[in-house]
Length: 372
Image (cartoon, rainbow, N blue to C red; front, side, top):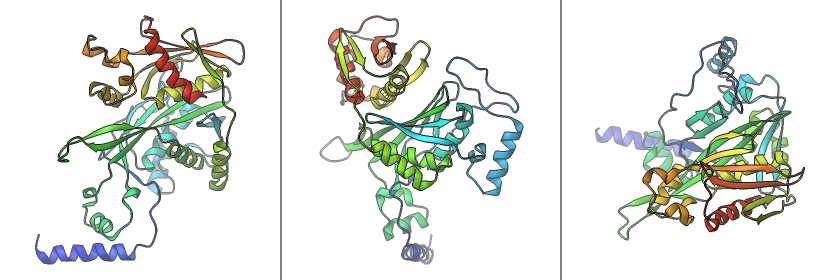
């Protein structure tokens, strides 16, 4: 590349930077992955068989044609044509937890809309399982934290934007639950940050960072808007849901966490607690009140490096005598209703073998903190 061409590119970048007057959004995510991975596909006019806690995909020829036409016309993001009328949606809250409740819409109707929503917000869908209503994005960077300086704009113009980067990455887990009146939608944030691991600053390592409730709230509000809720109304709903709400009482008795709440609300809330604490829900059966979970990949790696992940905080999971295959052993989280306003929560390894009392109490205490 000759000097004249380089000079021209630099000048073009500077002019572009000077001409740009629109401030960047506070949140402007871009995935590290170049493109989305192939998702689950269903042939036209077929849907997956209905099972317990499983949701069939709406994949009729007419629905696919409508989505493709809307995308080609550029009138709406892919998937938005699925909801022909604005949804009756609200933002619910219990303690510090929030989720979107959509009336008269099935999980199958919302699934393609959710997928398009995250892609339009700069994320790549890494894992998805429509059968159990679970979706996970890949890691993405909030490019807005880089600012809108002339140097960044110049680098973006010449295709070198990736030269500048932040030491943080974010991903989301999305879970949908069918209710008696519609569907509940849950967003769970996971964060990582990069640190130097030697004084010479020659080597770095990615470490888990705490869940960001504000970031979850931002995307819950954006999803309300995608559902057809007016932006001002969505902001108002978020403000109402952010206001203080009565805390639920929790206590640990006889190795069981007792939560003063209805089973329906407890089921929703426990699912969020598990995800916020670095656990991946691999399966669930609401009729039996059971979640099956494993530590997330990031926390499993943190355990191996003894860097303070959720599982490494429990001495039981640091037992070096256990085989490596047990690093991500499954847990069974059992919810049992006791009357109308109390739920008992028990945790056992898969196979119902008991956890040591001390380590089990540590785990239950972590859950109780967020449920209060």
